[in-house]
Every structure is written in structure tokens, then in C-alpha cells.
Amino acid sequence: MTDLRQPEATVEWPRPTPRDQGGVGTMKGRTIALAVAFIAGFGLLSLRAIQIGLFRPVDEAATAARAAAAPPSKRADLVDRNGQLLATSLVAHSLYADPKRIWDPVETAKALRTVFPEMDEASLIEKLSSRSRFVWIKRRLTPKQKQAVWELAQPGLEFIEEAERIYPLGHLAGHVIGSMHPDGSGINGIERALNDRLTTGAGTEPVRLSLDMRVQYLVETELAQAATAFRAEGGAAIMLDAKTGEVIASASWPFMDPNRPEANTPNQQNNRVTNSRFEMGSTFKVFTVAIGLEDRVITPESVFDARAPMRIGRELISDFHAMNKIVSVSEILAHSSNIGTVRIARSVGAPRVREFFSRLGLMEAAGGELLENARPILPKRWSEITAATASFGHGIAVSPMAVAGAYAAVSNGGHYIRPTFIARDPTVPVASRNVISPATSTTLVKLMRDVVTNGTGKNADAEGYEVAGKTGTAEKAGPNGYDSNRRVSSFAGVFPARDPRYVVVFLLDEPKGYAQSGGVATAAYAAAPSVSRIISRSAPLLGIAPTRTLAQMDAPTGRADPGASSPSSRPSQKAAQGEP
Image 1 (cartoon, rainbow, N blue to C red):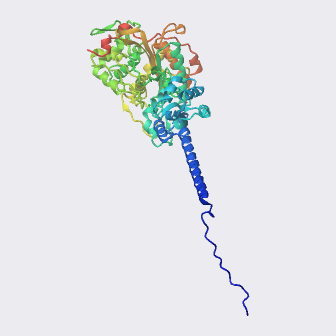
Image 2 (tube, rainbow, N blue to C red; image 1 turned 90 degrees about the vertical axis):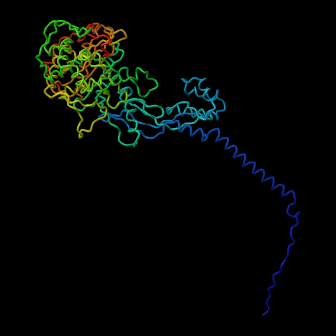
């Protein structure tokens, strides 16, 4: 069979010549196209680099910002004993600038002042013109401020996240809680004292303070009203749990707002409860009587001669209101006799007075955990005269907190417990040291109760509650001796008197009499009434039932004479400082 298929023809095409491939012109076109593409790509990269340089923080500026900012890590919250929030941390945005990327410092400064009109334009221009790669403009902006800056669209301005500490109750317990530096470290108060604890293991359980903010509010309100009415230079008020040493309330006037640390003056920052020292005057007479009772050199019925001033060396000791008679120990406290108190001190001796004051915590810093915690000013040498003047609260200066701790010790059965601002675990025994016997403590509280019912402390008695305590009015020392025009008026007391649970110390620094006080600013008028109101209002909150009937509460009470010591009963400046 014949194969009809034709064999495939093989055609060999001629090779193309250079002219057939487009020639030299085509090659140039491709070269130009490649060059244009390269230039376009380089241009885009350059534009992107310019954009990043103008509108994104370069590494150097961002690194500096991160180093200067407080990291937004969690800091433990602070709460009161009932769980009320006192301090918490939020994330805030802060504004900084990289001056190298600022096109026009003047224009940028003017734009910023539309958001922050309080800023000085010249200072802003100086900042924005600096050679630094990083300058702060404003720390911790509000959301509205951040949005307004964003809308300015100014190159060289950037935000960074920072931690912001918020104190929702404002100035309440401000001196105890404390405040923060912009870098995230504590300035004062618990924020400073427990800085490591608050930052270590962040995000864990909040730190629970001993404060009860319900009582704190009452105490601060009363302190502010009294300090304002008496035009005092300052004031302090404390409520202490006598059984546990826990501080229930602590207020220092003038108040401090932890939300605005930069606005608080040095006077506001000073915590007068723990960091100021005062010669407390007659409130110390309770301690002198306590040691006399404990050493059994006196009984409540013991009598002493107060018919005339007594002289010790060059110092003349007299009473503010001369009693001019033989007085019992009960009368010495009730009517605040300096002469009688000094005679008790002499009967126990200077070394014993010093030792007992030490056991009461009066010779050490007593401010609990706070670092704003002043040590007392003590006599250089405990001679007969320094022990005598210290027995009625002169020549020795202590903090109000130290007095509160000492009153707790002599009224709670005789156990000194160091004050604390941290809520105690009720399952853990409280550390204490014995200072007097329970019997002495009971007797002493009865004598203090007599001060309120029959003596200088009548205005401290509270409706429905039995208060026991002592007034103290002390002249302040100056360069030329004691100044009768500058006084510290205070009342230290306990309640309920039948089984003391709480101590209250209230103090006004340099109060001035006014019309409603009859022109008087002694402790009986400037301090005792405030203690009465604090106790009557706070006792129900603390679960303490009234101990008197309505008929008893309606019984009239007389107003008390001021329990002060006269200038002649004060030692000279030299003696007050304990110098020989």
C-alpha cells in the first residue's frame, strides 16, 4: 500500500539582522525606560523617607521619650479598710517634641497655645528651637487635649503612653496616701513609703490601709472648720484604734491634693500628724500620773501642796488658775495643776520619768510606715528641772501621733502598740510591750473621765458617749523664750470611757480667739468641742452603742475654764531645751 503522506518539509529561516530587531533606536528606548523606572522608584523611596522623618519619631527621639516617661505598668491600688478606692493607675498620653523635625518653632508654639493657653509662648519657642531630639511639652493629657493636638497636624509632635495615678477622693487623707512624681515614683505618704511593695508584683491585690474614709471625712471636716474659725496656722487630728494601733483617721491642715502635687505648697505638704513636733502641754500630765500610780507612790486620793508656786533652781512653777490649796491627784488632773504634777514627778525621780516616757514611745519617731516621721526634740540632759517641766509637757516636743500612741497604751490595759497605717490581719497577734498594769490603766481612765465631767475637758463630752481625756494649752517657744501670744491648743482623749477602744487627738497650732469663743483660744474652747463632735458623729459608724440615756444627755453641762499654764509656770528657753 502506497503511503500517500508527504514527508514534512524543513524550512530554515534566515537569522534576523540587527536592523530587523529594531536597531539602535529600540535599545535606547529600553535603556531610557529602565532609567525612568529607577528614578521613579528612588523618588518614591525618598518621599517615604521624608514622610517618616517629618511625621514619625525617629529612633533617637522615641528612645529618649521612652526613657523619660513613666512606663504604663500596673501599680497596685490603695483601698481603705472597707475597700473604698483611694488610688489607682490609668494609662495616659503625654506630648513631646523632636525639635529637629519642627519646621517653624514659632508657628508650632502658637498652634500649641490654642490647646494649652496657660503655656508661655516664649518658653515653648525656646523648647522647640533646642538642639535636643526630645523635649516634654505636656505630661498626661486629657482625651480632649490629645485630640486637639492631633488635629493641629504639626510635624515633630508625638505622643507616648505613660502611667497616671488617680486619687478619686481628692484631698481626703492626702498626707497619708501621698502623691507621685511624673516619673512614677512616690513623693510622700504611703506612695513613697511602700513604693517597692506597690510596684513589685504589679497587678496583684490592692494594699489595704487602716483608714476608714467615713471617719476620715468627719475628722477633716471638723478640723477645717475649727482651723478656719480660729484662724490657726495649722492643725492635726488623729483617731487611733487603741486595741490594734491602726490609724482610723489622720488629718493635717492645710490639706494636700495628691492629684496636683506641683500645686501643693511646702506648708500644705507638711504632715503635721507625724512630721511636726509640738510641746503638748498638759496632755502630758496623764503620763506623769500614770507612772506615779504604777510605782505606787501615789493613789487617786493622795494630796499635794498647791497653795503657792514652787521653785526648782532658777525656775518658778505656778498654775494658770491658782488653786491655793492642798489638792488630790484627781484634782491635779481635773483642774490641770502644774505644781501638783511636778510634785508627783519629783516623787518618782527624773530617771524614772525618762524611762517611762521612752516605753510610751514618746522618745522615738512614731509615724508608722510614713517616712515623713519626725523624731522628738528631747532634753539634752534629764535633770530635776527638765524632768519637772517635761512632766507637764514642756521642754519636750513630740508629734501628735506619738501622743495618740501613748494615750492608747495607758488606756487599753497598759500595752504600747506602734501605730500603723496598714490594716492588720485579725488572725495575727498584735506585737506590744507592757507599760503599766491593767489596774493602773483602769484607775487612770477614771481620773481622765473626771477631767471631762468635772474639769477642764467638759466641752469634750459627747452626746450619748462617755469621753475621758485631758486638755493641753502650751505657749510656743521663740528666740526670746515662751510667747504668750502663740499657743498650741489640744485635747487627747479616749472613748468609750468604760472600755476604751479609740483614741482621738485634736490640735490647733496658734489659734486665735473669736467672738463665738468669747475671744478665748485655749484647749477647752479650741480643741475639746471638736473632739466631742467627732466622737458623737463617728461612734455610730464604728458600731459603738451609746452608753447614756436621753435624760442623762439632756442634763446641763457647764463650760470649762481653759486648762492652760501661765507664762510663769513655763521654764526659760534655756531650761526648755534641756540645757544645764
